[in-house]
Length: 508
Image (cartoon, rainbow, N blue to C red; front, side, top):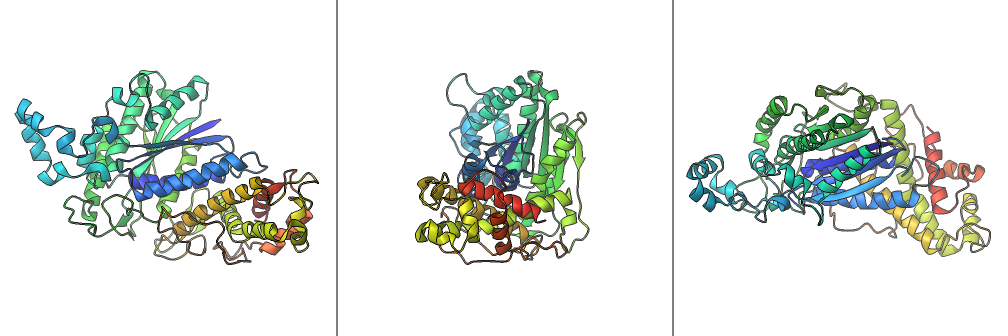
C-alpha cells in the first residue's frame, strides 16, 4: 500500500492541496493509495485555507459514502490531519516583540537586543502575525526556527497537534512494514510562510526520522512554487508590513540559495514550478479575504506526487526536476506530465461531475417529486437502480433519506470539483485551457452551495474538453447505455454514480 502525506504550507500550499485532493478523488495516485492531508499556516482564517477545508470536508464525505463502488472514483482513503498553527506551539503572543519577549531580551542580553533591532524594523516587530508572515521570509524564519525537535514531538500525553499525529502515523506505517511512504510538501518560496516553513519542517522531519533510524524508508519531496502571480498594495487598511511583489525575486533567490547550501539530506526530490506570465490577484493582508482562484501551476504541483513514486527507488542525493511547455502563448494536453493518462482521468472526472451536477442530481429530485413509476416512463435507465414499488423489489427507494443524502453528498462534491477545475482552466490569460466550463460562483467561501437550487440543463458533453480529435458522447446516449447495460450489481445512487463514471471513461 502506498502512503502519501501531503503538507500544504501557507496560502499557496493550501491551494496546491485543492489539486491534490481533487486528483486523489479520481484515482490519480492509485486505488491502493492512502492520502493524508495537513495544512500549516499561522493565519487560521486564511480564505484559501478555508476553501481547501470545505473541499476536503466534502471530499471525505464522498469517499466515505462511495468508496466501495466498482470504479476508482473515491476508491482510495483520505485522512484529514487538520490545520496546524505553528505559532500556537511557540508562544501566546502574535508579534515578534512578544514572541521573543523583547524587554527581557534587551535587559538580559543587550547585544542580542540590539541585533534584534538591527534585523527587524519597529513595524515588523509589532506586526500581527495572526494573519501570517506577511510575505516576509525573515519574519517566518525566526518564528519557525523556534520549532525545536522537542516541541514538534510534543509532551507526553495530552492533545497532539496535526504535525504530531501525522508523524505518529508515519511511524505506524513503517512499523507495519510499509515501504512506500512519501511526505510531499507544497508551498511558495517567494512569500513568507512557505519559504520559511517548508525548509524548516522538512529538516525537522528528516532529523526525527534519522534519530529513529527510519530516514532511509521515507521519501521527502517538495513542490516549490516560483513566482506565478502578482498584486498591488493591499487595500484593507493602513498596513505597513505586507507582501510586496517587488520582493518576490529576491525572496526566491534567497530561498533557493538556502536549499542549495543548507537542505542537504532534508529532501529527496524538489520540483520547482512557476510561470513567467503572472496572474494578477487582489491583495489582502491575510484573513478570509485572502482567497485567490486556483491556478494551473498548482495542478502541476499536485501531479508531481506521481513522479516521486515512479522514482521511489532512487534514494540518495537530493535532486531537482522540471517540466516545460511547448509554447508560452497557450497550454495544451501534451504539456502535462503523463499527458494521455492525465487527459483521460481529468476528462472523465470533469464529464462525470458536470453530468451529475447539471443533470442526474436534478433527475433524481424530479423522480422523488413525480414518483418513481411515473418518472421511469421517460427514463428507462431509472428502473435498473431504483425501486418502482417503494423498495419491494430489492432496490432502494429514490425518496428514502439515505438516497437523498447520497445524492446531496455527490452534488456538493461535483460543485466544488467543478469550481476548482473551472478556475484552473481559466488561469492562463483568462482563456480556456483544457476545458470549457460555465463559471460557478465561489466568491464567498463561507456560503454553502444549495444542492436544491435549480440549475440549467446542459445536454452536450463533447463541448467540455478542448480536444477536437476526441469527440465525446451526449447525455442522452449515456442514459441509453445505462439502460442497455448494467455494469455492476450495485443499485441506488452509489451504483448509478459508479456506472456513470465507468461509461464516461469508456467513451474516450
